[in-house]
Every structure is written in C-alpha cells, then in structure tokens.
Length: 145
Image (cartoon, rainbow, N blue to C red; front, side, top):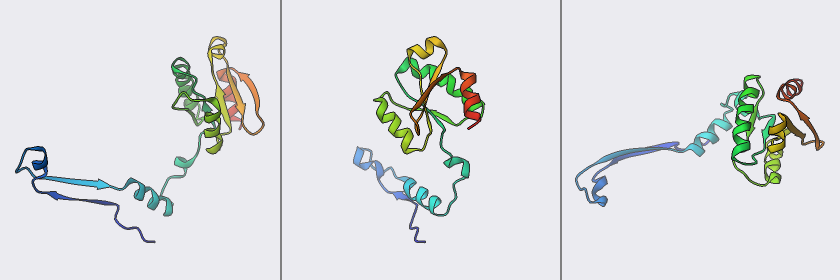
C-alpha cells in the first residue's frame, strides 16, 4: 500500500519578519488528519466499538428541548444504550435523513408536550411506527433490541 507522508514540518528562518519582527525563527509541524484516517481505515486499526453506531438519535427542536434531552441522553448512556443528540436545530426531515444514513434505527422526538408529560416519543425508522414511553420504558425497550 502506498501511504506517502502523513506529517511534515521544519525550521523557518525569519518567520516573524513578514509581521514586522525580523530576526526571529520558528519551527512548525503539521499532521495530515485525512491521510492518517485513510491509513488507519485501510489497515483496519480502528477498535470495533468506535464504529458502532448509535441506536437512538434525539431530534433537536431547540435550546430548551436540547437541554432536557441531554439529561435523558446521560441516563441512556449510563444504561449502556448508544444514543446521541442531533447537534443543530434544523428541519426534522434532515435529522431523520441523518439517522437513516447512519443506520440509526430510532429517532426520539421530545417537544414541549413530551417534556410536560415526562414521556419520550420514539419513531422506528424502518416502519415509521411511533410510541410514547417513559424513560424507564424506553431503556427497557431499547435494551431488548
């Protein structure tokens, strides 16, 4: 396999001269993150658990909902359930597409009604079936998966 260089660097005389401070040297180094990733991928060096996708994605409906979902996310992870929160507040369709492209089978929908009722609506992407569960019920349901 042809790898090529994955890092480089050197000494740079009068490095600060272009900024008006002549006579000061410098050294630098850089790493090619993309190349390192490609090499590790080709050589199958990533641990198996690092490629295990989440089984549940919390949709992001806004700041209040995200904060609430983060507390739920912590409890799910403590129970050994791989879950994540979508990082941005964007259209739900985009969030579901993301989950689908990452083979995440469930999306959790937690809006104001769910927060008030103490429930979590989950949608199974394969069947579009939805159900509303308590946190304990969700953990029990997902552990059986």
